[in-house]
Image (cartoon, rainbow, N blue to C red; front, side):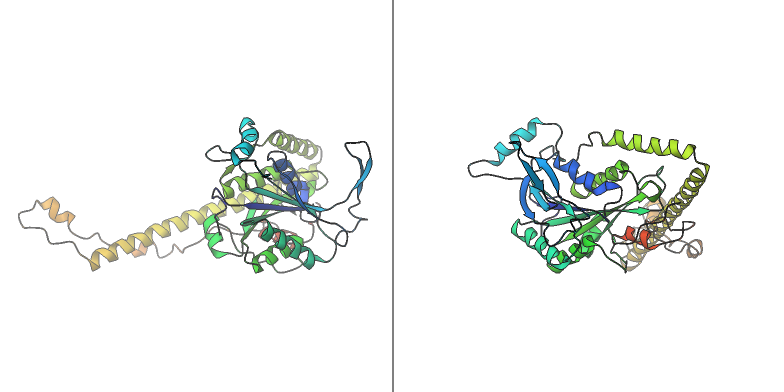
Length: 376
C-alpha cells in the first residue's frame, strides 16, 4: 500500500454529523476542504433504511430551474473527476491559478484527496459499513482517515488536544499513533474503522477534544487543530481561510462570558491547572526518557569498544595519542540507578496526574466512543 504522503496515494477523509461531531468540528473540516479542492459527487449512499428522518429531516430546496426539490441526508463521496480526453495538466491548470487550494509541499495541487460526508445512521450499521468498504475498493482508495471530535474536560484557553489511533503497528510507528485501548459502547466511526481493518485497508482515527462547557456553539478552534494534524499526517498545505479569525473570536466570546460568571471562571481555572500539570508531567517524562536513551547508547558504544578494541599504539607515539587509544570508561551506574525509563503520558483526555476524574466521555480521546460529559 502506498504511503499517505506519497504523490500517487489516494486518501479518503471520513466524517459524520451527529454524536462523533462535537462542536461541529469534523463537519467544518470537510466543508472547508470541499471548498478548497476541485471535487464532485462521485457516489451517494441513500439515507433510506439507514437514517432516522425524524432526527435528520430532509430539506426542501429550490434547484437551478426554480423547482422545489427534496435534499435527503444521504452519505456522499466527493473526489476529483478526470473525464475522457482531459489530461492531468488540464485539470491542474485551474487549480494552479488559484492560491486557495490544498497543495503538496512542492507547491503542486493535490488531485488524490477524497471526502466522505454524511450523518451517523440510526440502524443497519453493518450493511452501511460494508457499503463504505466497497466504495473504498471501487475507487482504489489507498488510505483512510476517520475524523471525530468529542466533548472533554478541556479548557478552551489551551491548545486543542488531538489523538491519533490505528490498528496497524507499522502506521503507528510511522506517525506516532497509538492503539486504542477503549472498551465500551461504540459509534459508527469505530464500526467503519474495524470493518476497513478487517478488509485489509489501512486507517487512522483522528480525534479532537472539545470543551464540554461550550457544547452549544461550533468550535472552529477544534477544526483548526484537526487541519493542523491532517497537514502533518499527509505532508500537505491546507489554507485556513477565515478559520483562524473565527477561532480567535470564539475564544474571546467564551472569555467574556466567563468573566461575567465567577463559577464558570473558577471551573475553567481548575481545568487549566490540571492541563498544565499534565503537560509538565509529560515534559518531565520526555526528558527522563531522553537521558535514559543516551545512557543506553553510551553503554552500547562502550560494549562495542570492549569487544573490538582498537589496535595497540606504537611505543613511539605521542602520550596524547596513546591516551586516546584507551577505551572510554563506562558511565557510572550509580548516577542512573534511580532514573527509571519513563514515557510521556499517552492519555490525552485530561485525566493525567492531577487531572479531573476519568469518565466514559474522556475515554473517547483514544479514538472510540463515550457519552457526553456533564456541564459544570
